[in-house]
Image (cartoon, rainbow over all chains, first blue to last red; front, side, top):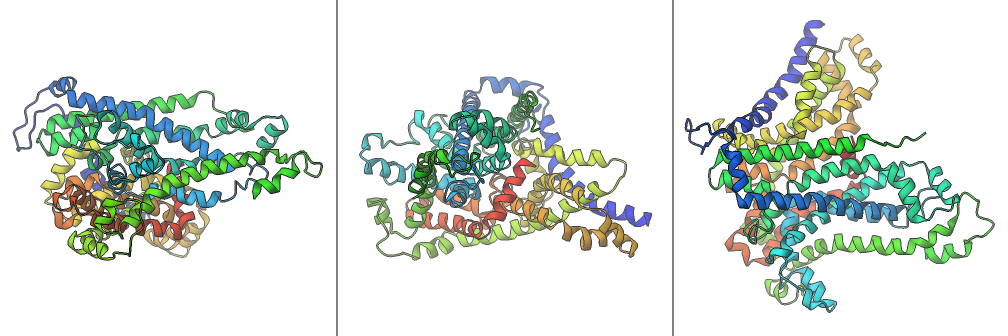
Length: 302
Length: 295
């Protein structure tokens, strides 16, 4: 019996562990040591340069553009997405508080809202490249149709508009998922709480602020972490959709794109690894901050 | 309609005190808001599908018009000439293989860690789960050389192994929690009947874990099907491009830049199967995807 047990455990764990060590753990570990070298891909030709790559990052204006753009995305994308998601999710429940049915058609809305979540970011980027096309695109077509022709701009070619255009796509692609997620969280709130708030004479906004929001806090926090990580990426949409890519003039450059270009176009593998390490610490900081922020004043349901 | 039905009830006596229906009046703006976002979501998708049936000239002169007649030749051109069909089949091979491997390895590890006590159990669990918190970009450069040295660059096997390696951690994390909730008595009874450890896993525990397997399977399928960064780096052979990669390459290649209708058709071929499958199984899929986020 015991013999069979050991054999089973070995057979169950070993293949996955080997795969994990070879393709996941060892690359992650190697990235840290590679980032301290000037390796360009030729075997045996890596020289130790210490923190040299990291010092170079500080003077790389395109990389600094990327950091700035990712920082802007990190603030704007989660805030707008969560704001819209919470708004639409509470709208879905409006009028449904007695018995929690939600407004008429809320099921159909949830189906449609979820569509973008199922599509590859590449499909979304190609689609929006068409939508943003200045002459034949959907967006300018709509603007011209409603008499706003002067706002029919070349969205991806103007340095000032390109990043907002990218962020709009990221928001568009994720709002639906968070509507469904928040909606499920609101469903889980005991309906007596809403009824009590109504009896106390609370209006829609007051109910939202003092009942809904505190009780979906955990879900919102998870959403912040997920969206933050997505905003630190942005690679697929930028690489496929923007001019350059990353343009015009670095206006939509993101860290992932800089890394990819340095590694696989210029062959600066050591330098690219340093960017990866920087991105890793940014992600780690984000996760730690979000988890710490969530630790205080948690609402307990009695 | 809702408005008309609700208004007279305002403040009336027959409504029980716990159900003040006054609130329902507010549902008109709610409908507008919901509808507006519905249009914003659906319009680009519908527009792309419609455009895939139009000629280039129709697309260029009037982006709004309906196709004069459905030009199915756009689809066949995209499928064969632009190789979307080949990319589609490549995706099926790679994602199918990776999904099978991920589910097999992931459920084995999750089960072994959740139901057996042994030294190093916790350590192995954390070694897997910690990988979820690392950005793939960090591993990208060394991963390329690992795959190259193994001679797996641009092969189906290479992509399948790497896809599975990066999908296993979440699968373990999700199913570990799931296996813990399953009752122990059934497995014990099976052991009494002389079932082997592997027999208990495959014949008793896996069938019991079906809801969890379906949820994480759907989550993994979509994640793998939509994968872009890994094939972009590890799969340089155009004959083996997966769908997302092929579509991205088409949209920037000079030859197809001008073939608008062909690109719209390719785009539609890439998104329609997923959307149709979703509408058919939408409740399962939404439950699986959101469970993935909150677990």
